[in-house]
Length: 170
Length: 173
Image 1 (cartoon, each protein chain N blue to C red):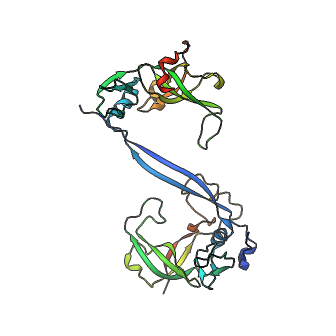
Image 2 (image 1 turned 30 degrees about the vertical axis):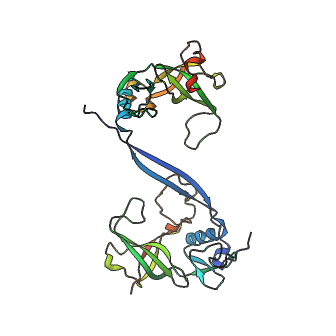
Image 3 (image 1 turned 135 degrees about the vertical axis):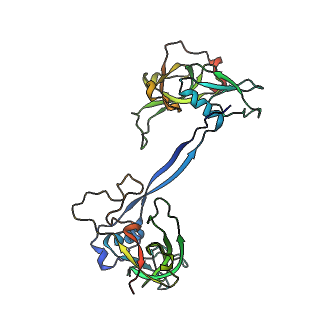
């Protein structure tokens, strides 16, 4: 007997709220203010994004330092068909980017205008920042927004305050 | 807490202390053939279970086979619109997306003719009068809002009958 087999969307969502702690909090605060910080490790190297404890000695780290918002592509992967909720809606690269002044690379998206030839290991990229939130703007910050992926018009203390990286003008 | 030294530019800034990190999983769920038949019948305001040919238990919602005997359950059995509360819970904790006023009562209801209970909401009675053995009936949405979901039943409410004898639901109590 032909009969209809039902199907329906089933969305499971956990609206976690996480405290950042002083170290990750400093990183997000700096993003909101339009710059990038890392932390001095026990051996004097700079870890970006900052971590609370030294990865080798496990001692607590305390010295937050500013790094540049431009750097070098260490490794990358091309995303030919971006998924919903990814930072860009056209083909882009996920890249490990070692910012000037940092000793560790960090992951972010790189927009080459959709052209995979626009990125290579060793190529230079620079952050494309969102604008700062205008004084008096009542747009909800990330701590208030009910939408899991709110359109982020302004910088508000989130990794996507850097919209993406773009190739540095040569 | 360890003292953190900040670069000059961060010292006056209001620090970020928390962020929302949603975890979201999107599934396309299919209830399968047996439960689809059940839900399509719900659209006609009918509650139809399936009987195991070996143990003769009537399952609702049916899953298409008997978990005890491992045989298909093809014999369909129309169940009553009333049933007996076999277990219940008074909910006093509000949930984030909860539309119900607390306290409210969730109950396991053994529909007449079924051998296992379904879970649903009990309303139209003070929460502290709900009890095991209480007889309740389904309250349906308006006809034009009914669809293939148990949410087509808004809730169950007492139907005025005397309590069911314990013997009639002891296997599920």
